[in-house]
Structures are given as C-alpha cells and as structure tokens.
Length: 232
Image (cartoon, rainbow, N blue to C red; front, side):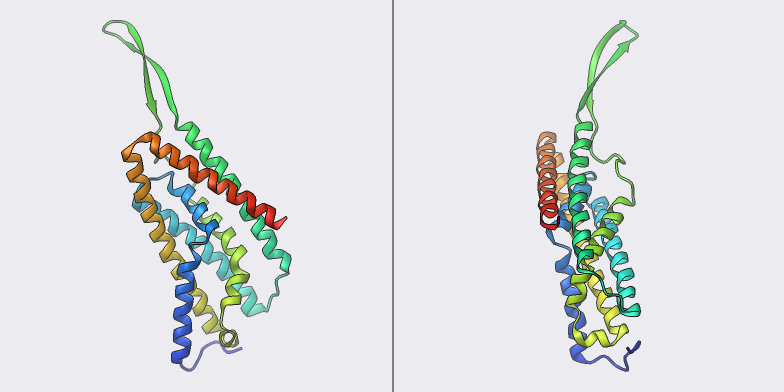
C-alpha cells in the first residue's frame, strides 16, 4: 500500500471533494442532531452552542481517526457485531441524555425563599428561577458523545471511501480528514443556528422555551428507544 501519491489526479481531487460534502451531510444524521441539541438547549447562546457542536465533531473525528489507523495500517477487520453494539450504546446515550435534560429542566423550575426585611421585621416569599446557561454539563461530555457516534459510524464511513483510495494510505487518510472537516463545519454551524433559535425562544417567553426543551428531550428519548430496539 502506497503512503504518498506522486500526484493527485482530477478524479482523485473530485472524490476528495465528495468526501467533504458527505461529511457535511453526515453531521445531520438524526442521532447526531438529537444529541447535540440536548447540549445546545443548556446554553441558548449562539457562540457557546457552536462550541458544543465543534466539541462533538472533535470527538467524532478522534474516533474515526483512531479506528481508521487500525483499518488502514493494521488491516483490522471489524466483526459485524461491533457496529451493532456501538449503535446500541448510542441509543442508550440518547435515552440518558433525554432523561438528564428533563431533570435539569426540573431543577430550573421556580423556587420560593423567605427573606427578612430588617426595617419592618417582616418576611415575604421571593421566587426566582434558574435560568439556562449555568454550568450543568462537563466540558468533555459533547466530545465523549461524539466519540461514540464516530465509533458507530466508522464502518459506514469506510464503505463510502472509493476503492481506488484504499490502495493509498495517504489518499484514504485525506478522504477521512476532509470528511471529518465537513462534519465539523456543519455541526458547528448547526450549533450556532440552533443556539440562536433557543436564545430567541427564551427571550420570547420562559414557558415557550421550557415547552421546546420538553419536546426536544422527549423526541431524543423516543429516538434512543427506537435505536435500542433496532439493535438488541
């Protein structure tokens, strides 16, 4: 297997460009979007939400790169049960994320506290709510979820690599790199746009925002349950 090509033909360049486009599309798979949306709803801020998307894409790229090395350099053959097991864990993760997000929403509910006014020695109840944006999520969580998604999709990605590229590690690695770059671009963009949408919703009304979070959490939960049933 060749490591470096003497030159890149127009056909190879076009196929590499196809890898970039497929990566852009791959990010919008239902399970990917559902997982990232849970994190985005915690930080209804476009830039912070874009950072969630980029961290997910980083985990996805790390997983694909590591498994890619095993396949290209060591000719590792994955048992068909590997992908099925990885998909099962994705389903479990989606269910867990849905429950976790609903629990955090419950924590954001209004609370009442008694306050003593020294001037008239009277007490009254003061209500406040935990607004979204507090650090409820570990910074590595989106990356870890991305790693799981990358592991589950690696076999599918390698099926998409043109057969002519499999004879050259350099071209195959370039294809994976561009695929991952496209995936990172689209998921970061999705995070930004979704964060802007959640921000506008939160500004429009707290109740509307809470209903939206419930709907997205339940949809992620249902999708995860379907994923589990398909792979058990």
